Length: 130
Image (cartoon, rainbow, N blue to C red):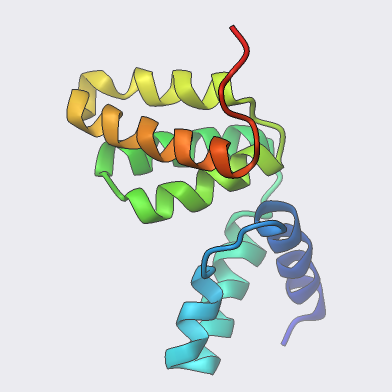
C-alpha cells in the first residue's frame, strides 16, 4: 500500500468524519469485504476527497447539492456533517439546498432541509440565530 495515499486517507477521513456517530461507509464496506473496503476508502478518501484542486468547503457544498438533487438522504447526512467539519456554515448549507429546487423540486429540498435540521440539532446548533 502506498504510504502517502494511506496518510492522505487518514488525514482526510479525520477532517471530514471525526465526530460522525452513525456508521461510516468505510465501516459498512469492510464489514462485508475488508480488502475491498480498504481499496474503496483509499480511492475515495485518499485520492478523490484529498485532492487540492478546490477547497474542502467547496467540495462539500458541491457534494451536498448533488446528494440533495439525487435524494440520497443517508449519504447527505454524512456530508452535511463533513461540511460543518470543514467550515461550511449552516446558512451556506441551507442555501445550497435551496438552490437545488430548480433541478430537484420542493419535496427534495424539504427532505434535505429536514436532514440538515436533524444534524444541527444533534450538534446543538439549532435553532439558528435570526
